Length: 296
Image (tube, rainbow, N blue to C red):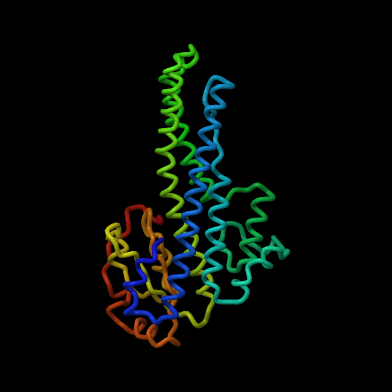
């Protein structure tokens, strides 16, 4: 997420749209920064658990739980999407909605919530029953497996010397575990950034899809040295609401994607000009195919 894109969109959008885009982008960036810091702290806790387990039991743990982190991140990212969309009073009045009692039976499992209160109900249901959303469960297990794999390889190599009390080896094992944590942390950072973009954009699109005023979306990519060919070829293109292509091209469209969708309404003259510009019609433009296996 980044607000440098705002400067490059001034020729296309009115001031109100630019302000809304900037505020939403700033909110997403602050959110992502906060969760990156929380992720760093989480990994420090995992590292301490590994060291403690070795000292107490003489071997590394077989399990480490990353699920709570990824579940909480997903729900907060979706909540942020509702807040920044704020197209209806129902979705902008977040505080009291959290306290509402909702019939959980009416909330379908594993589906994108259509309203903020549905999101809170889903969160409450999963939390009380301790049922982890499938996507977050898979991500958590991948990070856990990668981390523990490195830890156990370190242990296999140095365990005997560690048990013999070799001080240098013990220090080396601790350092290697920190290195293992660092490699897994880098992977988890990529997941956090990509998942922030996914849940944030999915919920915003769900909110805007319910508005009769919104008829199209504008693909907005960050234009800098890190911009990928996938986002660069879609920058500034317009998608018709309801077009099936949105199911695969709502950001993220690759790992570490920072793009987002901006709703367009014909009631706004500048938006209407974008909608009527045939050169911006996604269906009439050839774009870089998405990475192999992405969204499959």
